[in-house]
Every structure is written in structure tokens, then in C-alpha cells.
Image (cartoon, rainbow, N blue to C red; front, side, top):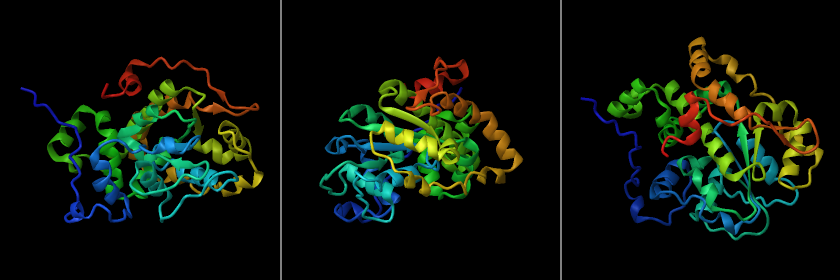
Length: 308
């Protein structure tokens, strides 16, 4: 008889003592998970208080921080940062966990939404979404070597578990995250997060979602960045591109041959399908690639969402 494996993430309980101190400031993502995310979705509860916001998202470790910082520090935008982690600042403001009085137009980095990504559909106050897509070799390398165990596990449990193969699903059901290698957690987390893009693009459309390839942004910033500013209807200055650097483009070269084979087999097909949504910037104004979005059978779960 086949046993049913429960892939739902275990509930994150408040740290000892914090349940009695709800007004303590939140300084890190572990505290945010215990005191905000554990209550369920509602992570964009205050978004409509900030009309025409720019929301920069994508899979973590894909360059969203760089782009959101460039936009936030542009003329005509509000710099709201108050802590040491600007995405955490955004999460605290948008969830209502930190008070903030709106005073202009904002750019928020919203990669933290994870399993709550359908909240984007609930808000239509002129917001625009920029999805930064990055090749899986670079992202998985960064997830493996530049991220904490907590951060990877949170992303994996929120987005990646439905994309494990049958054997890995059994191991996860029996042993939790200890039963799945760090590499397999990173690979499935990448797939789960990128697969959200298809549903978002279909539901919001190209007028509200712009898909940008990180490598193209870095290599052709003089073309891609002005087009991004055109999409969000914000005046562009050439000196904005000075904040873009290419020092991390070759990090994927450090992957082992085994790691590359696994990424190629499991992540590259999802990345290539997502690439079909990347805007083309060869002419004034972004042009969307015209390939059909009809899913191949192998990706039907990815495109329709594993929990629908």
C-alpha cells in the first residue's frame, strides 16, 4: 500500500517569548517568518496605499536587489529604507508590520512573497511588476554558496516541494529537508519560483508585467534599462546604469560537472520557456517575444500551478 506523503511545510512557531512581545521591532527574516508570515498571506496588505508602485520580483538571487535599488534612488521615487535590508523594509511596510506614511511613488522588492504570489492579482492601483529572470546556473550556484540554510529552506518549502521527483518527495516526506540534498532543494526552489511567472503573466498581462533577463540587462544596460524606465513611466538618466556591474556573470563557471548536469536536466527547460516572455529591446519600447505559451506536456504542472 502506498503511503501518502504530506508535502505541506511545517508551521513556523513563534520563538520562545516573542508571542508575548508583539510590538518588538523585526530585524531579520527569521523574525519576519515567525511573526508575520506564520499568520498566512496578507503580505501585500497595504500595497494599494502606495499607488503606481513598481514591484521588482523574480527568483531570489536573480539581481532583483540591484534593479530595485537603482529605481528607488531615481528622481521621482521615494527612498523609504530604514533598516539594513531594504527588501525586509519593503516587506514590513507592505504587510503592515511597520508603520509608514505614503509620501510619493515607491519601488518595492517583493521576491519575499513566495507562496503568497497570487496576492499580486488582488491589487490594481496602477502597480507594475518587473520580473527579473536569470539563468539557473548562476541562481542555483548562488543559492548553494551565498545563502543561509534558513533562507534556502524557506524558499524550498514555500515553492519547491511540488517540483521534486518521486524519490525526492518520499525522502522529504520521511526526513523533511534533511532528506533532500542542498542541490536538489535549490533546483526545485528555482523551478517552483520561476513557474509562478507563467501564471502571473497570463493573469496580469504584458501591460502590467515586464520580464527582463538579468544577463541581458547587465550586458546591454544602455538599451535595456531605458526600456524598463519607459515601461514604468519614469524619466531616465544615463548615469543610472553606472550601478550595474558584471562581476557576478561568471559565477556559474564554478559549478561542478554533476551540478551542471542536474541543472541542465531540470531547470534549463523551465528557464527556456520563461525566456519566451522576456521583452525584446531592439526597437523603441519593449516588444514581447511571440512564441506560443501552450505548454509542453512535461511542463503542464509548471504552467498551470501544482496546487490548482
